[in-house]
Image 1 (cartoon, rainbow, N blue to C red):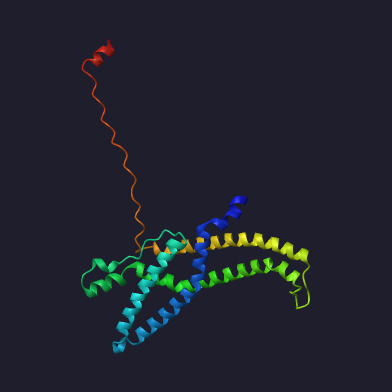
Image 2: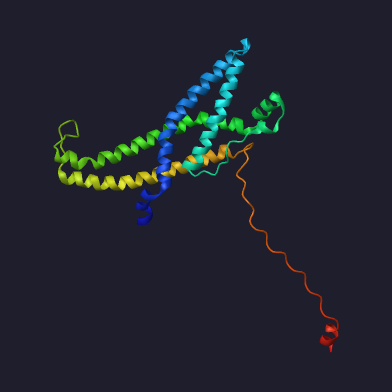
Length: 231
C-alpha cells in the first residue's frame, strides 16, 4: 500500500497526465472561440457565398483539432482511441466527399468533444492550481517561520515546529495530489473513449490470437479388433 502511494511519483503516466491537464485549458479556450466565431461567421455569410469557404476552412481545422486531441488522449492519458477516421477517402467527387464527411458520426462527436474541452480544461486547470497551491503553501511554512514572515492578517508568524509539521503534511499532500490528478486523468480518458469510440468511430482493431491447432481425426480401429475384444 505504501509502495503504491509513494510510487505514484515514478509513474510516467502521472506526469504525462499533468501535461495534458496544463494544456487542456488554453487549447479548450482556443477551440471554443475559433469554432463558435468561425461557424457563426460562416453561416451568417452563406447568403453572399463568402461563408462557404469560411465554413470549409473551419471544417478542415475542426478535423485537425480532433486528430490532435485523439493523439493527446492516446499518448498522454493512455486512452484506447483510434486515429482520426477519414470517411471522405472512400467517396468519389467533391459532393460525395462532403456528404461522407458530414454524414459520419465521428465528425459530430469530434465537434462535441472540442466544445466540451473548455469545460474539462477549466476543471483541469482549477484542480492543478488548487492542489499545487495547497502543497506549495504547506511546504513553504518552515521558510516563513524562519524568516518571520506573517501569514495571517499580516501579523501572525507561525512557530518553527508548526512550520515543520505543515511541511510534513505538505509532503503527504503532494503524493495525494498526484493520485487525485491520476483519477481525473482516468475520467478524461474514459470521456475521450466514449466520444472517439462511439457510433461512427471505428475502434482499434485487435489482432486475433493464434487459432488453435486442428484436432487430428480419430484413427480407424484395425481390422479384427472388435472380434478380439469380444472374444
